[in-house]
Length: 465
Image (cartoon, rainbow, N blue to C red):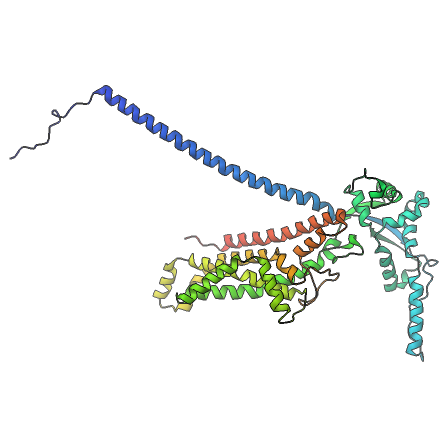
């Protein structure tokens, strides 16, 4: 039996205990130093990340705070609630003419034109002034200034009421009237009261009267429903609203939903699941990615040249805006849909094929339902992005002033972002600055709602692997 050449334990060199202790101490110091550096770096990184989050939140709060403080007061508007007496001595006009038996059309038209002239000569402003004096008689000496408190549209409102119901003559009715836009701005403190008279938008008597009527409770602040129910208005800015812009945006979003989402999802399914990978599909994929990065104003130029100049579609119509925004949204829908399909594990496809399902069955019965949350999220985010676009709509004529609410997608209309753009540039800046912020609040609320819906749908239908 051969002996081993390895040294025995007794033959091994003995390490000096003091030296061993020094080595252990040195290793401990190195480890502590390394740990200290690592902990310091980790703490620094976490602090920087947290600081970045705080900076982001600060600017978000600053943005929303600025918009809310400027916009929320515009949801309330100065108004006067008075009892109007439709004085027959003032409305000294006969009933609306009707054709008489045996009367020629020319004779009836002559009587009708004469009646219209008499009706137009009625002093409707005096009815407004008398309604205020009946409530606050001490203002008798300020009749000339009282009418400047009312919106310029309110006298026409009284005229239309009598036209619709002549039985009002001789009766009293309590009505709420809007104050003039400049009066509303003055009472809300949006005008510097220290400016000299020549730089003020209201006469000194009107300013003093407005303050007195506010103090006496004749003028009150009430929720402004007209901002949601009225279209834009230039003759009476206090009547301007978002109804026309809202309907224009609604028509465009419906067109985007019915065009870009079906085409985008179908294209993504074909490219991801059925198309052969060759040079043609590579070119298509590269172009889709390039289209997603193209500035939105380019799509506006494309829409103006093709849909308006070539197909002669109506200018400033939601139909054209919807088609342009559909082209812009299409790449986003395709990319997000393909990403959602790729996220489904290949084992799902293999299991379906292994059980005898066809390629189409495996995709539509198994893969597509699992990818649906991501597809819905991408589609809703694409629609929300289209909702906030302004540049392409300006190039297809949707920046025109539209004083009516569109009834169909081919009627002239504007959109919420364009309405914000138009109000921001209005000459009556003191009044429309608040209206602009209010419109931004409405647009942000819609976009936050769409994005919240996307998050909720993803959480509800998400399948974790």
